[in-house]
Length: 161
Image 1 (cartoon, rainbow, N blue to C red):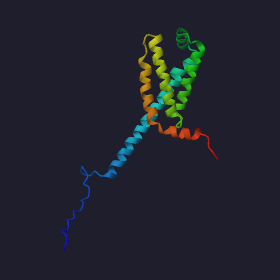
Image 2 (cartoon, rainbow, N blue to C red; image 1 turned 180 degrees about the vertical axis):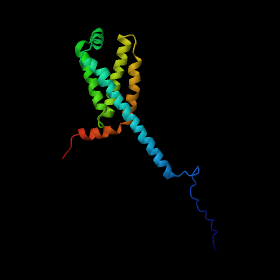
Image 3 (cartoon, rainbow, N blue to C red; image 1 turned 135 degrees about the vertical axis):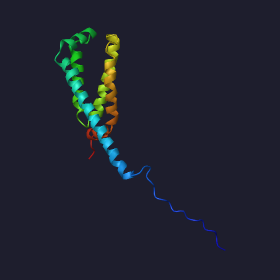
Image 4 (spheres, helix red, strand yellow; image 1 turned 90 degrees about the horizontal axis):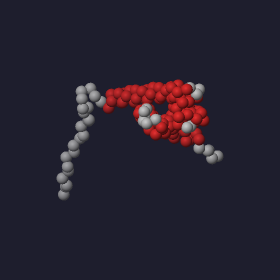
């Protein structure tokens, strides 16, 4: 007795969804988008680093009257002003160091949370939007560059021989 044999159906090759489209042609476009996104992210990092170094840290570190008056009004004095200025400058520099960029963006975001709270409590929310506006791209950088955290941990962890 013979058993019936099911007919075999050969799979047809995949047909591109649009004329001229193929898997190979989608890869360069995706690569170009990825390269463009990385370039935009790097430009944003540089702009934020310049802002934090020049517009934010420098007035504090040279004790410009605008910064000194604000810190005196809050009761933090010169010590607080110099400490915040040093943190901002360190964060600005670290934003430009590939292995530190995610950690720097996270730390500067935390500093912006503090700035937001200070704006609300000591200055009646006059410029409270500024730290929030700065925090948004910093958080994007921290997330997008999170892969650098593994490299940083690898460098920092002690090696057991």
